[in-house]
Length: 333
Image 1 (cartoon, rainbow, N blue to C red):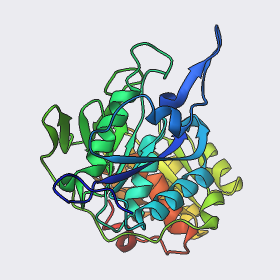
Image 2: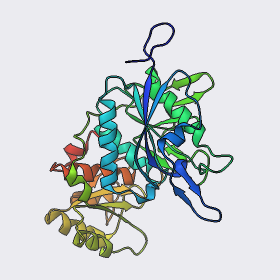
Image 3: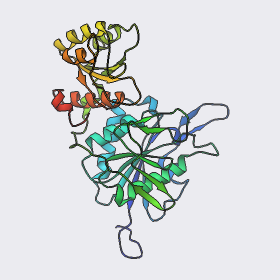
Image 4: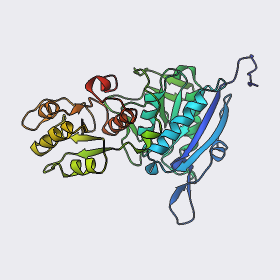
């Protein structure tokens, strides 16, 4: 039976799915921090006002340990909770190291209006100044907010709300580690409530990841002075179905990598062109081994999509048997 407020309206219900991360981490005396706290322990540390909160433990891992299998499990758990009629929104507690990838995957496959919100912490749960309880309280408020409906997957952290696409961890230890490339947060949480100030434009959802996603390998190769094609060739030999080149500048490489792209594309390997630069899109401009030549040789520009989100998009599409073409990528890059 639903719980109702004094005016007869149904209370918001938010499910918190715990996956580990710093927010769930504590340490033995003199030892390293390890993710070990349960959803119940996390939820017991703070209050949520009129929102009914329910916890669910999925696993407890630092996000540096996650693979495609664990990301698929998170996507499946979120979909199951979102499908419930009595659930207003979902929060995923998660490590900050790879939160940008999980948030993006959830955004790619989430087709409903209910908010899906990721949060975590920069300071472990057993530290006296841990930011976890506040971040969790704010994430629950976002997931319960009618204003967040239709925004897809979001990251709520240190009072700011970010759209999944284009958001990256930009600082290793700062209290607010996230930044949206070429943009900013789409909202905030403060003492007066949840405020959405911009709404992300989202393409039609993709199919959720299936078991084939677990083993679909896509590697990233960074271009630098003197780089050759050895690492790219090794990635393909190891089973990579696609390679993302993190090019220099607006998306450039050199003649050795240009020759490899021509060979790899002819043999059926997807080659995507991103940039190692923190902000700004791929804009093929230069010849003589630059981006114009790379695209002519068959590399697919990933536009303004950050390199590791580009990698994840390719893995999802390839795992579903999608022919990765410029047309297939257009809505997402």
